[in-house]
Length: 289
Image 1: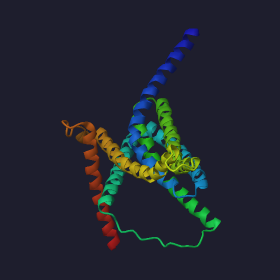
Image 2: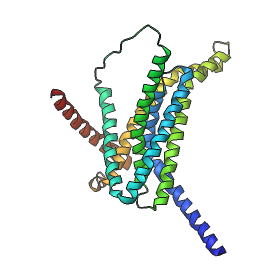
Image 3: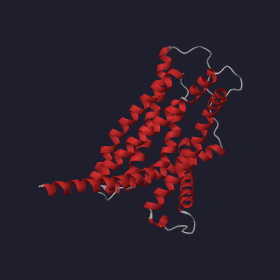
Image 4: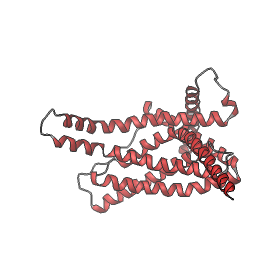
């Protein structure tokens, strides 16, 4: 009995080692999309009164957890009974990521004409403020659902063929880390200007160290969010290209003389602009109708 117990412990230790290795691989694969997730949520959580930023972010984070509670069981059922569906969803998700990355680049060089919102000088009522918050939270949770599907499927794609127990542990770990990590960092980012203002108020001297640091933090916030958007766009194309290269045999052997990261970016960019072109053609056709 004792030998059986120690054998069981050895099996558990071996499984945990496998889980640690697979979690590391899955984390690397999903790290790219987390950059875009971070940029999107930082933008969604900003624009509120200072006292409402963290409550709004907490509401979005709770919605994100609920999204993953819905997505994870469906993903595990597909992996257990229809694993090919995971690959199909993975490639479709790659097409969406490539399209999103290409669209951001296209929008940067050829910005669309946006309607200017009407500016009202009248103060908003409490009901209007709450309605605005609710709408923005809802929008953020819907966006998070799409990104969560991509994160879960990409993580699941790295452990396809492994025992279902290992898949559940690895993908669940990645889902939890993604939510806690992303929203924790977003909380720090959106409070950066508040911390900066407090540092500026600490010292009465004009050129003091704390006032300089505080001023830099206040000025850095919009630049940090903008840089996250750029990094997120590059990450989208890299992740999409990686999905295509590793799941489409023809693309797996293309441009072998070029470093894989450049190949994946080029493939993601080319396919992204192809999808963007097709989508724009369909938009024009349906807009005429």
